[in-house]
Image (cartoon, rainbow, N blue to C red; front, side, top):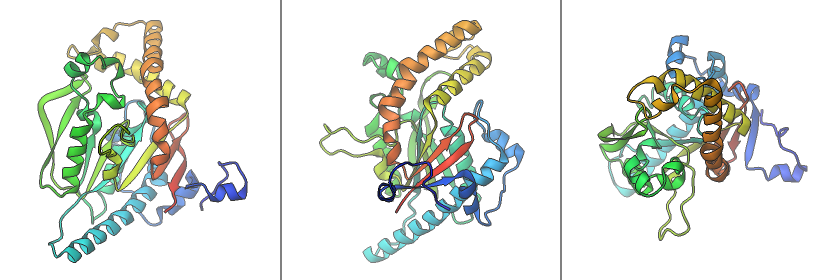
Length: 322
């Protein structure tokens, strides 16, 4: 059952709230008979670094969400068929596009991978592709030339024109659309490396600022989210996300940073004290600034908000009213 207990205000004010608010238990009840087809082994492969996620939470949060999206996809498919019939065209296969936004270290990637997996278990949309907007960052050489290396992940560090072109081609039903690939090891876009998107039933687009509005200076402003059929924002208190970022930094110091090819290899030999100082400085100076100025202000543009607690569990789901 929807509730408004988490929102204060008069009854008239509550009626104006754009979201219906569900506790995790109330949301879980909407799963209906959706089967849990994931195993613990499957989930182990989907979890992000230092992200806690149980099969119980998949059943409680992601299965109801997959059921909702399955209904949306079915309705969208019917709408496209109706439109093509009206226009006298053969039905075209146009992917249903889902955007997933949120801060660095909030768990967007895990959310995206789990959602991709559970959605692919539905028979009417078995092909679900996932693309991250990291590949649409300008290469480091360009960012350095423009003085933007310290603002990597901020809206201006993305090749928005290329991202918009990619989404336009996907939504126009192009048989093959290319997307650039990013390496977190080398901290750069891979030259001459691309992934091919071939008319999936569903395309998930995950990124920090995918709900960002266009600049008012643009002659013909377009939003990346103009191409989304549904959007999700993964949210948590800033201090929780900071702690997750620092924890992840410590884990990477002992793992990926030790790879000689790693852009961050210099951090692998830091002492605990220096690692804490470095991680906190990077968080405050770059990631928290981006979150507060650019990412969180887009939260209310999402169709659905997942609110997480300190242990990464989702405690509340907010679904925009139609």
